[in-house]
Image (tube, rainbow, N blue to C red; front, top):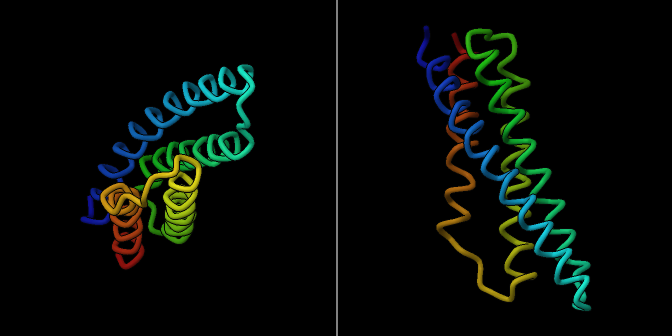
Length: 131
């Protein structure tokens, strides 16, 4: 197995795990927002944040699965790089919107962590494409 294929497989597995965790956290978040909404709080932007988090978690989970399945297929590398870019964009949006919703500052650590896995994934796909 080539270096790129190994990296895709390992990072893909990590993305599956973190995507599943993200789904669980998002479901809990939807429940919390629904309870606050029922109590009379204005939660429109929070619902939007939950939807964005749900999209991010699903995208990460699907990309991880695709990476593991296609790690040894260089012809699929371009599609995998596009998937990684989508995750980076969703992560970027999430790291901008969450501070607006919560009133906190942008977390540099969270921002970087949200870029590391898809960055490694894209790099593995690039290596896989090169042969």
